[in-house]
Image 1 (spheres, rainbow, N blue to C red):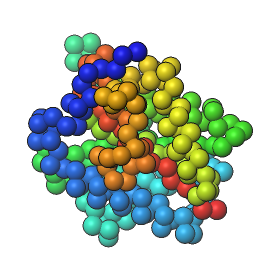
Image 2: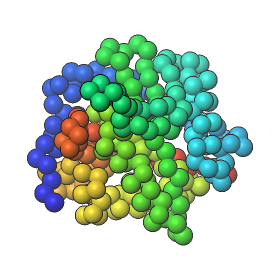
Image 3: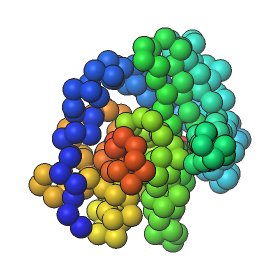
Length: 235
């Protein structure tokens, strides 16, 4: 599949840069998310053990982010299990329904800022292939189809792994999986001018392990950039 020719338009045109005098704010929030995960893992609560179901982990983490935000200099609101939907006023129905794992809403940025963090547990073999498929088909596609980040240019996927030594293997496996031709088609990946499908550097967001760009002209909605992070459990 030939890549759309609009790679440089995603998060690089004048319109996006004008609306996104917010990048430092996103970086600040992401830095807090990463630091707070690491802080909790130093003495992990029972709900955040890797053996737990993913929603149990993310609900505890989301509420802890919310409770501790102010003392870390973060204003705005973290909302676990936030409903994502849009009203079709002509049909008088809700469409694109879903629940994001954790959403962040700013209270001081003009224009207002909100973004979604979607989490997926990742496994090494056995089960690694299935977890990577779920990451893409049940995670990334929610952004591609505008169930998440409906009117936004960006969002974040977070993989959860059992141990720190698993991070690199899972990142490398995800990068390979996303670049498979069938996955490029499914995720409507906007390729780099050199034909590659994944950005390792330079990154738009410093906390990202890698980034991908996705076309949403089938909706139509703004094309979306996804930052991909991988968090490790320490026990």
